[in-house]
Image 1: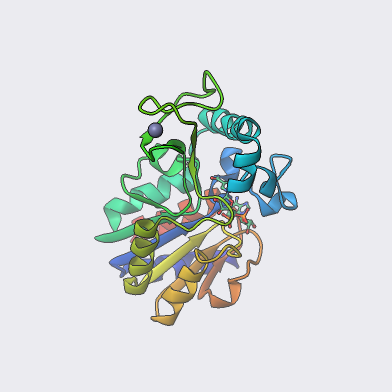
Image 2: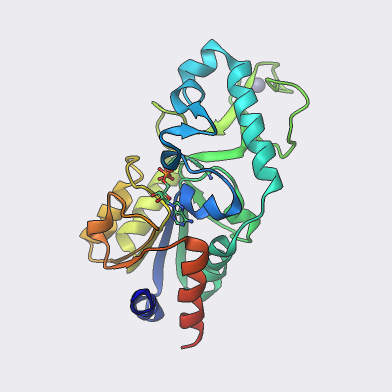
Length: 247
Ligand code: NAD
Ligand code: ZN
């Protein structure tokens, strides 16, 4: 049964040049990183609003930083999985390929993806709350919490998008224009309930792109999918890729 769906996905992709892959937390699940909604609204045992909002950071920056420092330390220990690897290899296969992610874990880059549109920022960037300076920091755990800006001495914050904050404009516009122009959108491991990111699927469907969904469960956008691969991304994407490579 799902062999037919794998074949249909490969057929759609075989003739495509403009392809967008759009990923959520599920693509990293097989690397050992918990998804958010999968855990009943808890993220590593925390109510997400208590750690992922400007309000929470203003109230208790050390608490918020402990959470992110732990996340960084956990992610530093895990490896990209075959789904990340296939999505990286596709930058060579498709002439016009855009990888858009809601994830903040950096595992796409870890698998070799050179250009990743990060809609929700990255655990590996920190930003000064005083002067706005942004920098990459791979140290995990950090030696002191909260880290302080070397320029102005103010607290730095995680370079991720929190509840109530706007998406980075350049990333969102880049993702939107890629979705408007694509022939195929491959949606992997997102529950697609977080807007405006989830609206990308509707944008692609509205311009007539084929939508391929990879998710072991039916998501909020299942009705928009032309092909549905109901299984874990780390198993399904390599099968699609093997069939593509097989010609
Ligand atoms: P989500 O947690 O809301 O949904 C995850 C989806 O992945 C679910 O639909 C689930 O059925 C699916 N899934 C689970 N295992 C899978 C697998 N092996 N293969 C394919 N799909 C699988 O995630 P979301 O839609 O990305 O939204 C949550 C938000 O929380 C995101 O915006 C993200 O920024 C953040 N988040 C990020 C990470 C990360 O960076 N790894 C982890 C948790 C949450
Ligand atoms: Zn500063």
